[in-house]
Length: 149
Image (cartoon, rainbow, N blue to C red; front, side, top):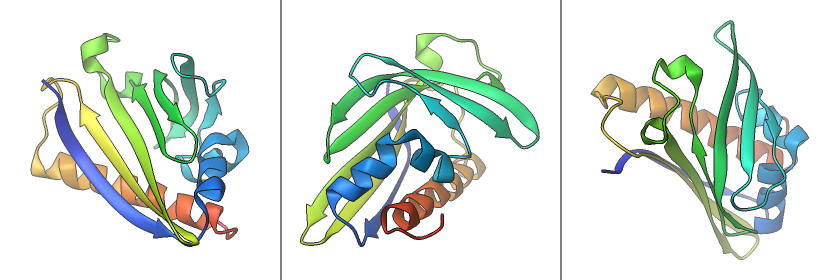
């Protein structure tokens, strides 16, 4: 059963095109997505890999692009060996970015949905997720607005 683990939103003072470019250009994405090197072709159904270092530990996370709707929605599955859970589909969660353009600005909502209840969602876990995803959105906002992330 899918469970929404966290949802955070922001308003970016930039067009949906600028936000989309920040989300789908590896060098820009790296500036705000935990320093990850992101490898994918940005086509639905394609694999996506995230490589980097988190809290002093190297990682290579993976997933699949579920939704690629330019300037509207980007969603991908995600699993990390740092989670300590087996590499099984039920242990992947879904990360989605929904864009809502309005005039010269764009609302962005980032949602993380767990596919099952294998990963416990305590108040502490939820707070950590909100903290991390808020940091990602803040970096996305700055990058899309042309400021340092």
